[in-house]
Length: 325
Image 1 (cartoon, rainbow, N blue to C red):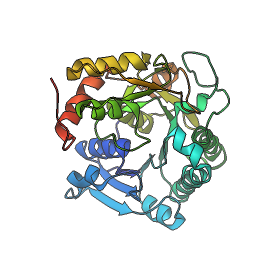
Image 2: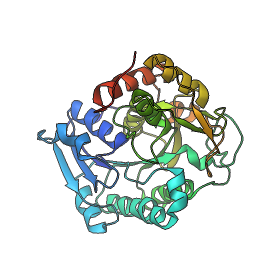
Image 3: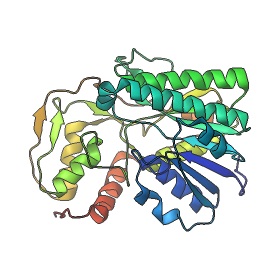
Image 4: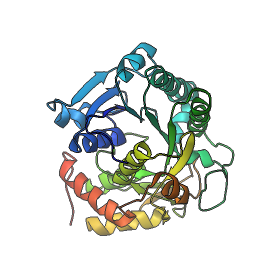
């Protein structure tokens, strides 16, 4: 199913990492895009290139503000809800804030979308919902117990997504992202994701820290695959009210990822090892069969291609950091 060219999208968290990539792709395809972001974790620099586009509207406000959610969803066809606070360790420090933003904020957006007759509400969930389940690959319907407040907020929003479809007819799609990486992912700060953090430190001649023994595994997923997953959900004629794994379908060990980054950068730096972080899942990779069969999702980029593209981007965009090799 092709989307009408005059479709209007609202991307919440559109100034963030994944959100800004969604905005960029939608604008490139000729759609109208509204971006709702309070810039608490997003960056205005991510959307500056779009500001002069007549099909782009930036709304600086908060998903905790119901009035703002109602206003933003008026005359919108598709909501891509990315606004949330990420990071498992940070959620352990601030559980109340995560409940307020990730659960209540998402519920505000769902209800506003329902009131304003939005066609599809596609929202970011997370592989963290699999919790302490040791089954691999991770498959929908085989979740364990949540290991962090962050994971619990995502599990809760999935339940609301199911109910809003069943009770109110809102076509919700939960996308369980598996360790997304790529251009515009923030490499700074204590809660930065591991791939951009490794790249930034190695480009700057510093020694990265690996929490744990490095043998933990992840299904690292390049951001363009996630963008495609969102568009697949918007175009799907089935699957409403359900959740889907959005990954690359691979499994990479963290120490191997680290060494591959070193190889691409042409550096040789032994990492430091520290204690594992509370709440982290040991191993994770996605069974993407359901997403393939129900919404037509098919990842275009494998891990190696995505990593190469990401490093190229960071080499050109990290200011004040030298390159090696």
